[in-house]
Image (cartoon, rainbow, N blue to C red; front, side, top):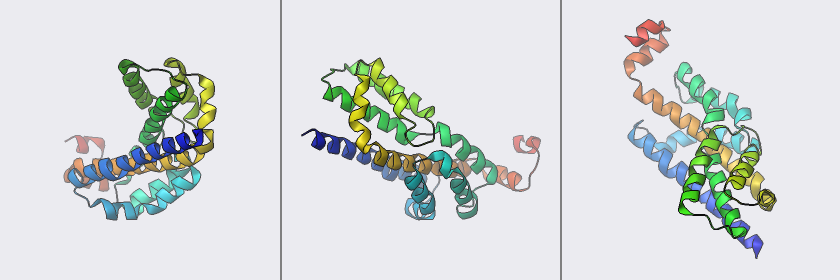
Length: 209
């Protein structure tokens, strides 16, 4: 019976990741960047495959940078800054995963979380996602901290280790995809004048003017 619960847990995580990818990312690409999401995703498929296979944002960083500059034709200054910072700070998938794990294990151990505690889990998962290491299994120590803070037994983390690797691969793909999307959004919003100045390698004073 518990295996069925774990399968349902994995389904909820993957569903959340898919909603973030195909609904949230697509919405901002279409409205802010004025870009058709499907061709954009197709151009980035090599990055997604590499992220899924390695489950590491840091290992995928060179591939993501090459895709941003060579395939998507984003300005190198924007791509290098956004994607490099995003490899450790932009962890949407990890934040979502950490929150779902804590809520799932709270139900397993019959820990009745109040509405306030559930909101606390959401915000702490968002903050923990920023500091998650871009390596396989990097979110597990932070999940344990979240569990302890809301009274869920820390040893419960062992119950989800069987599916953690697969879900790690999925959430890493979302994390890396988010970096490319944000780089595209910033490029679309900085203005043509700034982009031209970047291409000409003008000094910072020219960009400010």
